[in-house]
Length: 135
Image (cartoon, rainbow, N blue to C red):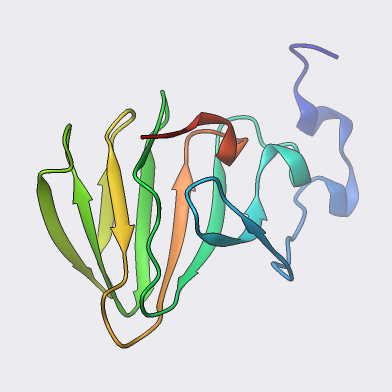
């Protein structure tokens, strides 16, 4: 049914499914994510959303997401991130803040703090890992 609206074929609980993040998967970036909403589990077509828990000392690999934007909401803790064409920029994000990462922007998040950081991530790529490019 290429081009068809997938919601048109759903009924009942399948129309608006609830996802319970009960397992993690290893992302290409080097972090573990709690599976949320994606093309793979609910048939999303233009968005994905996942939970990320970064223990103290966690560090991603430098990467970017080709052609897809990212928004992060930090629920608890603090994280730091190098970003920019040559990872020359640096900032610290605190609980309660949102972060926008444009498509194609190189970045490297890490947690140098003593507390676990928990965040919700949303991307305009329904396949989440499809647009990850390691640097």
